[in-house]
Length: 375
Image 1: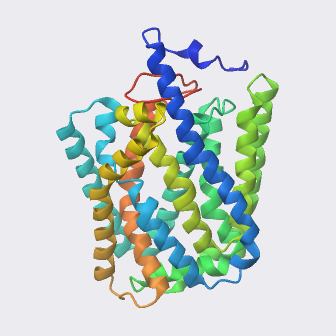
Image 2: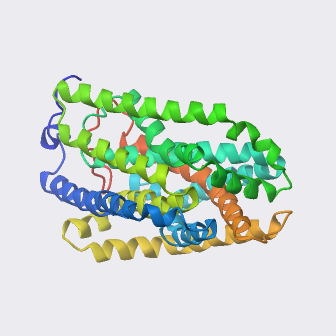
Image 3: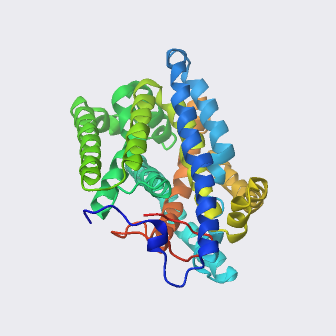
């Protein structure tokens, strides 16, 4: 795989209708521009406010996080029940029943974990979010034509780096605020701060920042090697630019605010765009320049389970032993509720990755409903 990737037209399956494939490609380009490229530019522009952000109280970050969660954050996973139907033509009743079972079983496991071992559950949630946010960026990069990610190892390294920037860098750049959030979250279950000491030890933070810096350099070096062997440079340039923005954002912006903005502006829109591309009607609308119909369909489909997500958070708030008193307590409740939804969501997205061939050594345009994935 040292040569440059063949063009999309060269990779299409023999039976693919050219007009349909071009329509799906056009929709993919629109989704890439509006849910990935433009938000990345906006985040870069927001960096100019860094001197102001560092002077804001943590409560301001909680407000931003809450606003992001109740909008795109909660909605981005609220169409999971339709993913098997649209990505693999699974019958609607089976799609609903299977996804409901996945959410019920895995969500219950997470909730029990928080009550039994809160500190372990917190660390597990961080690692799971690390995986999921990296998972989302790998898809976005490939949708945008990042042909330098040609092997599973390179994609796994990208998951490590992209997911690690929001989760690991704030641990080093703002350990005090990061610890406040962790203590408030596990404190809801009566656990003292001493249980978190190993996470915030200087040796741990040194190892984390060293590992993240090394992994970033390795992934960029691997991309340069691919370019030297014939891969297009545009994908690598985009990868490097986004990595630079993310490093600066999470190094200089306080973590609650930084993650709240990232969740709502970066991660959630990318996944929403992906879901539009597995809906044939949304794909057709996008390719015809009718973004309003695609957005309307997503909002309609996501509304019931978005409300369900709010109810999960409210239920956690009513059930935690310590009660909810401060804004940080409210943030902790939101994180526990999100954690209960994250594990099943990651399972569904992992299944979608498999169906769309994201982890194949070589991806081509493949004929699932509304799907466009370039190599």
